[in-house]
Length: 203
Image (cartoon, rainbow, N blue to C red; front, side, top):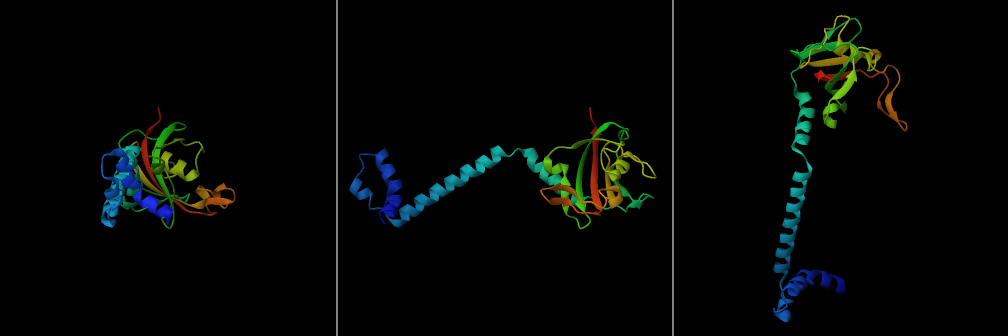
């Protein structure tokens, strides 16, 4: 009881210390309404500081990144073309730049999903494009063929956006992948869906 009384009186005691000439005896006889008003002011002040810190601590591009990350879900659908390897592809935007060069580094943004639409990886979420060497087996076969081209698939052009459906044999095959401490991000025999944005050739 003594502790709770001290907590209730603390704000008023602080004001008394700031203004020693005030009437101490009458000042301590404040009402419940006064306490509630003081608590509300403190709460409002705290919320204001919290919101201000969030604005300062969160750069504008972070919000833009999140928007773009989820925007790939709403991109126009296109009819997939399937080639002999089993890869499905279609172009949302063809692009107007250079083709993806063999054995060169390129920058892409991508969102990767399972067949049920669950996102398991995205460069947008990390806030920067992926730099990868193309055409020489440094990435899964479906991305090499889907971006560099070949076997009936045209090469992507800088600025292009392409959807890929990658069968297990062109992805990670019969073994699970992305495993750490017994947990695997990608199950065995998974068909993967990629939205690829060819940002540019790495310089």
